[in-house]
Length: 308
Image (tube, rainbow, N blue to C red; front, top):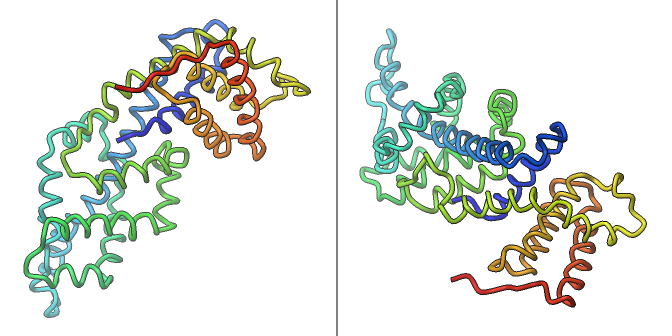
Protein backbone atom coordinates (compact mmCIF):
# COMPACT_ATOMS: atom_id res chain seq x y z
CA UNK A 1 0.00 0.00 0.00
CA UNK A 2 2.88 2.36 0.65
CA UNK A 3 4.94 3.61 -2.29
CA UNK A 4 8.70 3.83 -2.68
CA UNK A 5 8.39 7.61 -2.53
CA UNK A 6 6.74 7.31 0.88
CA UNK A 7 9.53 4.99 1.97
CA UNK A 8 12.14 7.51 0.85
CA UNK A 9 10.44 10.19 2.94
CA UNK A 10 10.44 7.94 6.02
CA UNK A 11 14.11 7.07 5.49
CA UNK A 12 14.91 10.79 5.13
CA UNK A 13 13.01 11.57 8.33
CA UNK A 14 14.84 8.77 10.13
CA UNK A 15 18.23 10.08 8.96
CA UNK A 16 17.23 13.57 10.07
CA UNK A 17 16.29 12.28 13.53
CA UNK A 18 19.51 10.28 13.65
CA UNK A 19 21.52 13.43 12.89
CA UNK A 20 20.19 15.04 16.07
CA UNK A 21 21.67 12.30 18.25
CA UNK A 22 25.17 12.22 19.70
CA UNK A 23 28.04 11.49 17.31
CA UNK A 24 28.40 7.97 18.64
CA UNK A 25 24.78 7.13 17.90
CA UNK A 26 24.58 8.66 14.42
CA UNK A 27 26.32 5.74 12.75
CA UNK A 28 24.56 3.07 14.80
CA UNK A 29 22.60 0.97 12.32
CA UNK A 30 20.59 -0.79 15.02
CA UNK A 31 19.34 2.54 16.37
CA UNK A 32 18.59 3.71 12.83
CA UNK A 33 16.64 0.54 11.98
CA UNK A 34 14.61 0.80 15.17
CA UNK A 35 13.78 4.44 14.48
CA UNK A 36 12.66 3.62 10.93
CA UNK A 37 10.44 0.78 12.15
CA UNK A 38 8.88 3.09 14.72
CA UNK A 39 8.10 5.70 12.07
CA UNK A 40 6.57 3.12 9.73
CA UNK A 41 4.56 1.58 12.57
CA UNK A 42 3.29 5.01 13.54
CA UNK A 43 2.03 5.63 10.00
CA UNK A 44 0.16 2.32 10.25
CA UNK A 45 -1.37 3.46 13.56
CA UNK A 46 -2.67 6.71 12.06
CA UNK A 47 -3.99 4.91 8.99
CA UNK A 48 -5.82 2.41 11.19
CA UNK A 49 -7.32 5.21 13.29
CA UNK A 50 -8.54 6.86 10.08
CA UNK A 51 -10.27 3.65 9.03
CA UNK A 52 -11.65 3.28 12.55
CA UNK A 53 -13.25 6.72 12.42
CA UNK A 54 -15.15 5.86 9.23
CA UNK A 55 -16.35 2.63 10.81
CA UNK A 56 -17.48 4.26 14.05
CA UNK A 57 -19.41 6.95 12.18
CA UNK A 58 -21.23 4.30 10.13
CA UNK A 59 -21.94 2.26 13.27
CA UNK A 60 -23.30 5.33 15.05
CA UNK A 61 -26.51 4.89 13.05
CA UNK A 62 -27.43 2.11 15.48
CA UNK A 63 -26.65 4.30 18.50
CA UNK A 64 -28.74 7.09 17.02
CA UNK A 65 -31.62 4.70 16.40
CA UNK A 66 -31.55 3.47 20.00
CA UNK A 67 -31.40 6.96 21.45
CA UNK A 68 -34.27 8.22 19.29
CA UNK A 69 -36.47 5.22 20.08
CA UNK A 70 -35.98 5.91 23.80
CA UNK A 71 -37.05 9.54 23.62
CA UNK A 72 -39.95 10.46 25.88
CA UNK A 73 -41.49 12.65 23.19
CA UNK A 74 -41.06 10.88 19.86
CA UNK A 75 -41.83 12.01 16.37
CA UNK A 76 -42.63 9.65 13.51
CA UNK A 77 -39.07 9.67 12.21
CA UNK A 78 -37.82 8.34 15.57
CA UNK A 79 -39.68 5.04 15.19
CA UNK A 80 -37.90 3.56 12.20
CA UNK A 81 -34.40 4.98 11.91
CA UNK A 82 -32.57 3.34 9.00
CA UNK A 83 -29.42 1.59 10.25
CA UNK A 84 -28.42 -0.16 7.02
CA UNK A 85 -25.11 1.70 6.83
CA UNK A 86 -24.00 0.12 10.11
CA UNK A 87 -24.32 -3.35 8.66
CA UNK A 88 -23.47 -2.81 5.01
CA UNK A 89 -21.20 -5.32 3.30
CA UNK A 90 -18.06 -3.17 3.34
CA UNK A 91 -18.43 -2.42 7.06
CA UNK A 92 -19.17 -6.05 7.87
CA UNK A 93 -16.06 -7.27 6.06
CA UNK A 94 -13.92 -4.77 7.92
CA UNK A 95 -15.39 -5.79 11.27
CA UNK A 96 -14.49 -9.40 10.52
CA UNK A 97 -10.92 -8.49 9.52
CA UNK A 98 -8.88 -10.13 12.29
CA UNK A 99 -5.80 -8.01 11.60
CA UNK A 100 -7.81 -4.79 12.12
CA UNK A 101 -9.14 -5.99 15.46
CA UNK A 102 -5.67 -7.08 16.56
CA UNK A 103 -4.06 -3.82 15.47
CA UNK A 104 -6.66 -1.74 17.32
CA UNK A 105 -6.19 -3.81 20.48
CA UNK A 106 -2.41 -4.05 20.24
CA UNK A 107 -1.95 -0.32 19.64
CA UNK A 108 -4.74 0.71 22.03
CA UNK A 109 -6.03 2.84 19.19
CA UNK A 110 -9.57 3.29 20.50
CA UNK A 111 -8.16 6.02 22.77
CA UNK A 112 -7.73 8.25 19.73
CA UNK A 113 -11.41 8.04 18.73
CA UNK A 114 -13.45 10.93 20.12
CA UNK A 115 -17.10 9.96 20.56
CA UNK A 116 -18.28 13.57 20.40
CA UNK A 117 -16.74 13.93 16.96
CA UNK A 118 -18.25 10.61 15.85
CA UNK A 119 -21.66 11.95 16.81
CA UNK A 120 -21.09 15.34 15.15
CA UNK A 121 -19.92 13.88 11.85
CA UNK A 122 -22.73 11.32 11.80
CA UNK A 123 -25.36 14.03 12.21
CA UNK A 124 -23.73 16.03 9.40
CA UNK A 125 -23.80 12.89 7.27
CA UNK A 126 -27.45 12.38 8.13
CA UNK A 127 -28.31 15.73 6.53
CA UNK A 128 -26.66 15.00 3.17
CA UNK A 129 -28.45 14.10 -0.04
CA UNK A 130 -25.99 11.26 -0.65
CA UNK A 131 -26.88 9.59 2.63
CA UNK A 132 -30.60 10.16 2.09
CA UNK A 133 -30.35 8.44 -1.27
CA UNK A 134 -28.38 5.57 0.23
CA UNK A 135 -30.85 4.77 3.01
CA UNK A 136 -33.80 5.24 0.68
CA UNK A 137 -32.65 2.32 -1.48
CA UNK A 138 -34.01 -1.09 -0.51
CA UNK A 139 -30.85 -2.90 -1.57
CA UNK A 140 -27.26 -1.89 -2.20
CA UNK A 141 -24.52 -3.23 -4.41
CA UNK A 142 -21.08 -3.86 -2.88
CA UNK A 143 -19.84 -0.80 -4.78
CA UNK A 144 -22.58 1.37 -3.26
CA UNK A 145 -21.77 0.08 0.21
CA UNK A 146 -18.13 1.01 -0.28
CA UNK A 147 -18.95 4.39 -1.83
CA UNK A 148 -20.97 5.60 1.15
CA UNK A 149 -18.09 4.76 3.50
CA UNK A 150 -15.68 6.54 1.15
CA UNK A 151 -18.10 9.48 1.19
CA UNK A 152 -17.82 9.63 4.98
CA UNK A 153 -14.04 9.80 4.76
CA UNK A 154 -13.64 12.18 1.82
CA UNK A 155 -16.63 14.51 2.21
CA UNK A 156 -17.36 14.46 5.93
CA UNK A 157 -14.12 13.76 7.80
CA UNK A 158 -11.54 15.42 5.54
CA UNK A 159 -13.69 18.50 4.92
CA UNK A 160 -14.35 19.14 8.62
CA UNK A 161 -11.95 21.90 9.72
CA UNK A 162 -12.83 21.21 13.33
CA UNK A 163 -12.05 17.51 13.13
CA UNK A 164 -8.84 18.16 11.19
CA UNK A 165 -7.79 20.58 13.93
CA UNK A 166 -8.65 17.91 16.50
CA UNK A 167 -6.51 15.37 14.62
CA UNK A 168 -3.55 17.78 14.60
CA UNK A 169 -3.92 18.36 18.34
CA UNK A 170 -4.73 14.84 19.51
CA UNK A 171 -3.42 12.41 16.89
CA UNK A 172 0.40 12.45 17.05
CA UNK A 173 1.97 12.58 13.59
CA UNK A 174 -1.17 13.59 11.71
CA UNK A 175 0.23 16.94 10.58
CA UNK A 176 3.41 15.37 9.16
CA UNK A 177 1.77 12.33 7.61
CA UNK A 178 -1.68 13.57 6.55
CA UNK A 179 -0.76 13.48 2.85
CA UNK A 180 0.57 9.92 3.16
CA UNK A 181 -2.52 8.85 5.10
CA UNK A 182 -4.70 10.36 2.38
CA UNK A 183 -2.88 8.28 -0.21
CA UNK A 184 -3.19 5.12 1.90
CA UNK A 185 -6.91 5.69 2.39
CA UNK A 186 -7.38 6.25 -1.34
CA UNK A 187 -5.58 2.99 -2.07
CA UNK A 188 -7.64 1.31 0.63
CA UNK A 189 -10.93 2.32 -0.98
CA UNK A 190 -9.65 1.50 -4.46
CA UNK A 191 -8.71 -1.98 -3.28
CA UNK A 192 -10.72 -4.10 -0.89
CA UNK A 193 -11.23 -4.62 2.80
CA UNK A 194 -8.80 -7.55 2.93
CA UNK A 195 -5.98 -5.37 4.23
CA UNK A 196 -3.32 -6.62 6.60
CA UNK A 197 -3.42 -3.89 9.22
CA UNK A 198 -0.44 -5.43 11.00
CA UNK A 199 1.96 -4.90 8.12
CA UNK A 200 2.17 -1.74 6.04
CA UNK A 201 4.94 -2.97 3.73
CA UNK A 202 5.46 -5.94 1.48
CA UNK A 203 8.63 -7.91 2.13
CA UNK A 204 10.28 -6.34 -0.91
CA UNK A 205 9.51 -2.78 0.14
CA UNK A 206 10.55 -3.39 3.74
CA UNK A 207 13.87 -4.74 2.48
CA UNK A 208 14.28 -1.68 0.25
CA UNK A 209 13.56 0.68 3.16
CA UNK A 210 16.15 -0.88 5.45
CA UNK A 211 18.71 -1.40 2.68
CA UNK A 212 18.46 2.27 1.71
CA UNK A 213 18.78 3.41 5.31
CA UNK A 214 21.78 1.23 6.18
CA UNK A 215 23.53 1.99 2.88
CA UNK A 216 23.23 5.76 3.42
CA UNK A 217 24.62 5.35 6.95
CA UNK A 218 27.45 3.05 5.84
CA UNK A 219 28.47 5.08 2.79
CA UNK A 220 28.30 8.55 4.33
CA UNK A 221 32.00 9.39 3.94
CA UNK A 222 32.22 8.15 0.36
CA UNK A 223 29.01 9.92 -0.66
CA UNK A 224 30.21 13.19 0.86
CA UNK A 225 33.46 12.85 -1.12
CA UNK A 226 31.34 12.85 -4.26
CA UNK A 227 28.95 15.57 -3.11
CA UNK A 228 31.26 18.22 -1.64
CA UNK A 229 33.10 19.09 -4.90
CA UNK A 230 29.72 19.74 -6.54
CA UNK A 231 28.63 22.26 -3.96
CA UNK A 232 30.86 24.84 -5.68
CA UNK A 233 30.31 28.12 -3.87
CA UNK A 234 28.06 26.53 -1.27
CA UNK A 235 29.48 26.01 2.17
CA UNK A 236 28.62 22.46 3.21
CA UNK A 237 27.72 23.67 6.69
CA UNK A 238 25.23 26.17 5.22
CA UNK A 239 23.44 23.67 2.97
CA UNK A 240 20.12 22.54 4.46
CA UNK A 241 20.54 19.25 6.31
CA UNK A 242 17.59 17.73 4.49
CA UNK A 243 19.20 18.59 1.15
CA UNK A 244 22.42 16.83 2.14
CA UNK A 245 20.51 13.79 3.31
CA UNK A 246 18.56 13.62 0.04
CA UNK A 247 21.79 13.96 -1.96
CA UNK A 248 23.35 11.08 -0.01
CA UNK A 249 20.25 8.97 -0.58
CA UNK A 250 20.25 9.78 -4.29
CA UNK A 251 23.94 8.91 -4.71
CA UNK A 252 23.38 5.61 -2.90
CA UNK A 253 20.53 4.75 -5.24
CA UNK A 254 22.75 5.54 -8.23
CA UNK A 255 25.48 3.21 -7.04
CA UNK A 256 23.93 0.47 -4.94
CA UNK A 257 20.36 -0.05 -6.17
CA UNK A 258 20.73 -1.44 -9.68
CA UNK A 259 17.01 -1.90 -10.40
CA UNK A 260 16.10 1.76 -9.80
CA UNK A 261 16.59 3.90 -12.94
CA UNK A 262 18.69 7.01 -12.40
CA UNK A 263 15.96 9.23 -13.86
CA UNK A 264 13.47 7.90 -11.30
CA UNK A 265 15.94 8.58 -8.48
CA UNK A 266 16.54 12.20 -9.54
CA UNK A 267 12.85 12.96 -10.08
CA UNK A 268 11.85 11.45 -6.74
CA UNK A 269 14.40 13.42 -4.73
CA UNK A 270 13.58 16.66 -6.54
CA UNK A 271 9.93 16.25 -5.51
CA UNK A 272 10.79 15.37 -1.91
CA UNK A 273 13.17 18.34 -1.66
CA UNK A 274 10.47 20.70 -2.94
CA UNK A 275 8.01 19.45 -0.36
CA UNK A 276 10.19 19.05 2.71
CA UNK A 277 13.02 21.53 2.33
CA UNK A 278 13.52 25.11 1.07
CA UNK A 279 11.90 26.65 -2.07
CA UNK A 280 15.23 26.40 -3.91
CA UNK A 281 15.98 22.86 -2.79
CA UNK A 282 14.39 21.07 -5.74
CA UNK A 283 16.59 22.90 -8.23
CA UNK A 284 19.64 22.50 -5.98
CA UNK A 285 19.20 18.73 -5.54
CA UNK A 286 18.53 18.34 -9.27
CA UNK A 287 21.72 20.18 -10.24
CA UNK A 288 24.01 18.39 -7.80
CA UNK A 289 22.67 14.89 -8.49
CA UNK A 290 22.81 15.47 -12.24
CA UNK A 291 26.46 16.56 -12.05
CA UNK A 292 27.42 13.60 -9.85
CA UNK A 293 25.61 11.20 -12.18
CA UNK A 294 27.51 12.49 -15.21
CA UNK A 295 30.83 11.90 -13.45
CA UNK A 296 29.83 8.42 -12.31
CA UNK A 297 28.71 7.52 -15.82
CA UNK A 298 32.01 8.72 -17.29
CA UNK A 299 33.80 6.49 -14.80
CA UNK A 300 31.45 3.60 -15.70
CA UNK A 301 30.32 3.24 -12.10
CA UNK A 302 26.61 3.12 -12.83
CA UNK A 303 25.44 -0.47 -13.29
CA UNK A 304 21.70 -0.73 -13.79
CA UNK A 305 19.64 -3.82 -14.52
CA UNK A 306 15.95 -4.37 -15.20
CA UNK A 307 13.88 -5.40 -12.21
CA UNK A 308 12.80 -9.01 -12.53
